Length: 629
Ligand code: ACM
Image 1: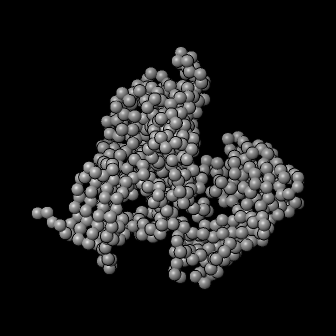
Image 2 (image 1 turned 180 degrees about the vertical axis):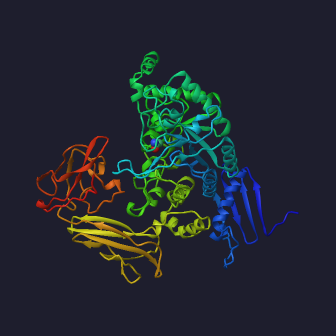
Image 3 (image 1 turned 90 degrees about the vertical axis):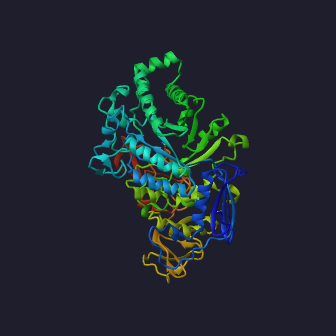
């Protein structure tokens, strides 16, 4: 008997704008959901969960007093983008299937609809292929694994055999699990590069550069790549046949990134093939390779996605481009009327640091705080509206080099995935970072109920130091993402309490200092005490030029090395690398002074190149704090 009150009524309704949109009407007596498809209804239910107190996520009976109220609302909602993805790299560190499922739950709850599953790479092949069992028996395991950075001296290793893979039954189970939650899984099978694990299993797929291929135990771009010969294409096609049977997704990701051409340059077969096919260079050979794979995938009714390197040498006719080295590739592809997924590393790589590295678990580098994710707009202003329509969405990538456990994956993902989900779903006119931060208290509670190991930098203090040219002083501004935070701080004193100085305006420093600070709300401590060390001296705030240039552009001139920040071992952004025996820092400060040899050679070598450390130079009483190397 249809009831009119005290019910949740779902209705399929073709008047909704698209298959993901919904209308949620909460009145005092009932909840009505209208959607064009069950997917829209699913999303309405996720919104309902969000409207309820976060304790709804508890897996235990909630005994404390909670008002189980939902506000009376009418919500008409539609996603900004149809492709709302996250990439999980399970090659560098394996994530067991149960944890992948948990991740899918979290994606679905935040209305993401794509899991891009990076299943093969140099450090491990993670998907069972019946026709090629060695891919997993050999390619699924490595003898040891680097723990820190490979340029660390001494290098540390986890010395146990490491690996794992998903059986085809596991894959079917995870795909079905995702489908129920309206998440599509797009598998990635990397080619022609990032192929060490495959070549360790079947060396005959290589150009014969060597025969002693191993599943790689450290993280880099390696010269071993697939050999563009018939038997390699047979292999790849046979692999793709099994992959396409397991994954019903329209898209199959074929990688295409970071493929060094050294082996092809040396290979007689490759050079002959290039002549025969009229290919001017090895980039064209890569393009020819990808075209061939695309034809095969297209012949099975599917389309390929490739990283933006597939533009080099000419784009395959139906390929979708995943733009990661910035947005340039995506812009070029959209202008060529190819579909694009924007995932520029500086805005979407959530394996980058999200907090000051001295407090963070070791990460790959970079810096991508919560607000940078939130403010990302995947539609470049330089494109026309028509060109923008080729940008089908955006994706956060979680590369696994330095993320060893499922808990660590969660730490990198949250809360940044909450920000990404608003980039992906929320219509631009409703995006509002301050409003977002006001909702995060509740979201963190929800994540706690779900036992998600999220990063809490949100409740900590961030430091921004600048040389104020006009006042000739160094000013340190303290801030926190947490709204209405009271920041208490002290200089050169690590004990912070609610009675430490209350931060009101930038702190002026005239000499070296360490600032300690913590966030409080209504007298209650919200997070850890953090600190930052500043070096203030005659060089602070001065322009300079580095000859030769550093590895990192922002350290080449003006302030990178003289911005008052001391570097930390884990914060590569503050370390200036010079791959030569000497370096000049020119025109430091006013006038035309030249300070040469203001460095000492650092005692390690990286790829045979000497790095130098900008160092304390007593005679000139200048100190330059490059974090070093
Ligand atoms: C990539 O980050 N190599 C796609």
